[in-house]
Length: 413
Ligand SMILES: [Zn+2]
Image (cartoon, rainbow, N blue to C red; front, side):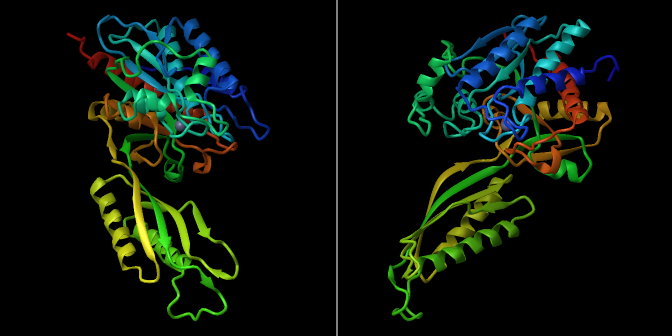
């Protein structure tokens, strides 16, 4: 890498800190839910910065924002760089924001260097990545990629019954361009890892090769309500005892499919939830994840077998979601890996544990991601922290990868 082709780490940091003032929380984080007044303020600031950097800003019907810096080849598809500006209710300063403002820093650097790229560069802010206000997460990148339809997105409601479409119109970001019509040659996303792997290995760059697959289940265990004093132990049909065995199975299966497999029971309801009644019904959730779809199927088989073998109560498994693993594009991965080697920081190839906009996009557009460490792997927490040097390194990787890809993207014929 030529040493004069470096981003300005101090400027990137200042921009992240400036953005973090919008909907700042006392504990140092941000609570900037999507399509709120705070989101509007964040969008306006981002819009102003992009226009100051010479970009043309447009947005589509779901308010996804695209800031374009033209390239030499007017008909080449743009290399897009982005993430999201919305946060969790008690979110941090970096989740999502880093990926958007790293894209801006790439553009600002290209301006400083007077560099014209072959393909245009676009910075993207995806609406409602977090899903904290309007479920599900990654909603608008999902519509873009064809995983959800437009009406589904517009009709989502928050806890107060406010519709996504109405709130989008209220903040003035319901554009006219159909969602998904805006074409990219490639999409790159930089993000804090939100896990401990890079930090544990003293590495600075994660070259992300894909996202893991997920299977989500609603489980209903049906036994029989009965008196806790007068019902002998033999012959009881205690739904909670069966549920407890199933939860241990989830743990056992995840460990057997480790280290990549993970399994979680995050919610449980006991009925009638009374001290002196044997529980007649228990409902709980299972979240299984694995980067290999065949092994994720193995986890599925194992939990189904356990459900059939359970004697005390009847276990019904309803798989409500199967999101297959996503593999990122080899050309994009190579561009990121080469850049990581060039900047001379320790790096590793890895799979993303969390879902990201890039995982949705990859179903439609060549995509890949760059991870940087975050302290203690902590995210979705006000204490989320990333070192300025690491953010700078990740952004330099983005710059080099975008320059490589910009040359490789052939003009559209
Ligand atoms: Zn994020």
